[in-house]
Image 1 (tube, helix red, strand yellow):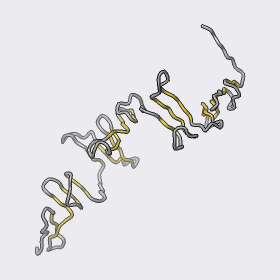
Image 2 (tube, rainbow, N blue to C red):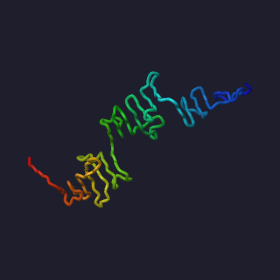
Image 3 (cartoon, one colour):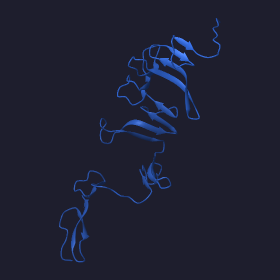
Image 4 (cartoon, rainbow, N blue to C red):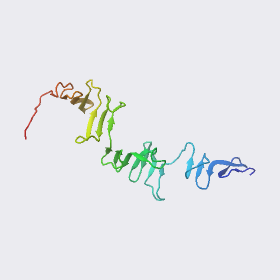
Length: 212
């Protein structure tokens, strides 16, 4: 051996059959860096990381293998699970190690805006379905919460006042048939999509009004 690494904290490696040089691995006695001389965690890698294997275990103790990120080779997907659930969120307000949850999966339920979902899908706040940029725009339907008493929740649809409608329909074998239509002037149609009165019923039927 005719040469050596000669740089503090770098792990040496054989660069030729007779020479030793510095590797990319930096060890300051506390943290290890690959591609960096300033690691701030136990292991810090600057650049892409390729791993062959199925699972990454996030352990509270040596025997804990319940919190895991793994590759599901059967369907070529990433599986992620925690012992009681998984939170997905952001750190911009809480700091680098404090996640503010946005989506929670726990015990078979999914929560958006809540970490304690009580049904298969549980959201807090308004829920918007559609493509328009604002809640009241044509094309958006919202379930809104937090209204004033006695109406605290609403189902709303966007309109520009030109006759847009909201319909309740059935889908039978791919054929969609509107069964009840609400027009933005307040008219309601049953059996018709063009109601002409506050309540417009088209078809053979019976309307019963009882005083009990």
